[in-house]
Image 1 (cartoon, rainbow, N blue to C red):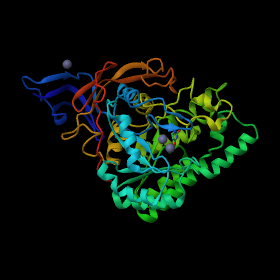
Image 2 (image 1 turned 90 degrees about the vertical axis):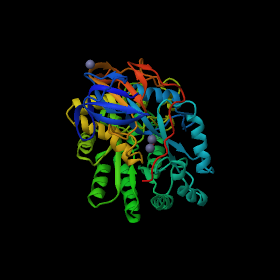
Image 3 (image 1 turned 45 degrees about the vertical axis):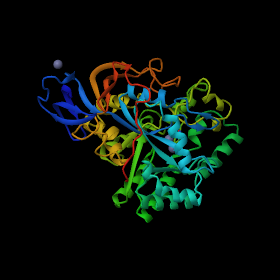
Length: 457
Ligand code: DUC
Ligand code: ZN
Ligand code: ZN
Ligand code: ZN
C-alpha cells in the first residue's frame, strides 16, 4: 500500500503543475496524474500547493555563546521549524578550544539524539586549528559531515587568522568539504567596540555602528581571494550588505567556486531597529547587524538574479527577558543572535513572492533545492521528484496568519516579525512520508528526526 497525496499543485524549482505524489517506503515513488489505486492511503491536497520541506542550513540550537546558551534545544527548535514548514536543518557544532572535532561532534550528537523531530546534519566550526585538528578535516566526510566553518570575527573566542583560514580551505578542498566563512574583520571591530564603550556608547545601536559594512566586505574579499588561489569551494554565510555582495558577484564572474547565502532578517530590518526605545533594540542584535534600506534592495535583487543562492535563518535565539539582558549596560555583552526558524518561509513567501521579488519556484529553490544541492543532499532532499525523501509541506497559500511570539513554538520570548500579517502557511508537513504536523498540531514522535550523512562537495 502506498500513500498518495492527491489533487495538489506540485511546486519545484523548475515549475508548478497539478499532480499526485506517490510515496513508498518514505520516498517519492512517482509524481503524475491519477496515481491513486484501490487500497492506497490518500491525503487530499485539493487546493493546496505541495512544496518540498524547507531546508535551513544555518542554525544554532543549544549553542553555548557569550556566557549563556541559545534557548532552543533540539526539540523546541525543531518543533518551531516543522511548524513553519522546515523539515531539515544544518546546525553548527562548535569545536571547544583544545578539543578534537570528533569530540565536538560527539557532544552535538548527544544533544540531538532522542530529541529530534526533523532531519539534521552538522557543520563543524574550527576554532582551534591545531595540526592534528587540520588532519581531522579529511576524516569528516566518513562521519557524514561535509562542511566546516571559520569565523573571521569574535576575536579571542571563535576567530581564526588567515593562516588557519588558508590551511583549512586547502584541507577542505582536498577532502571534498565545503568551507563556510563568517566574514567580518574581527580585529577592526574589536577596536571600534572598545573605543565606543570608552566613550560611554553602550546602547544596543552601537552594535551596528561598530560593525560597518566595509568590514564585512573586506573579510568577504579576503576569504574569496584565499579560496581562489587554492581553487577551493567557499560559501559565505549571512551576507548582509551591498559591498560584500559586490565581492561575491565579481568572484563568480571570474569563475571562482564561491556561493553565498543571506538570512531572512536582512530583508526586513535595518540598523535603525537597534535604536528602538529603551533596550528593545537588543532583540535585533546579531552579527552582521541589519543594514540599510539600500542593502535590502540589493539583497532582493541578488536572490532573484542568482548571486545569492540560499536564504537561511542563522536562528540563534536568546530570550529578551533573561539573556539579552546580559548586555543591558554594555552592548558588547548582548548575546549575538536572532530567532527565525519558524517564521522564515512564511515571511519570505509574503514579502518575496507576494511582494513580487521572485516566483514561487524561486522561493522553493532558495529555501530548499539550492540548500540541499550546496550541502551534499542533492537527489535526497529539497525537491518533489521520484527518488527524493518524501519531505513535503502542503501549503494553503490563501490562509491568513499573524506572526506572534504568543503562538510560536520556539522557547524564545519574542518575534522580530511580531504582528506581521501573512497570507499562506503550511498546513500539513510530512517527513519521509510520515505526517509530522497537521493544522498546527505536532504529530512527530520525539526522537524521530534522523542525522543526515551528507555527500562530499
Ligand atoms: N552571528 C549571530 O548573530 N549569532 C550567532 C553567530 C553569529 O555569527
Ligand atoms: Zn479533493
Ligand atoms: Zn556567523
Ligand atoms: Zn550563525
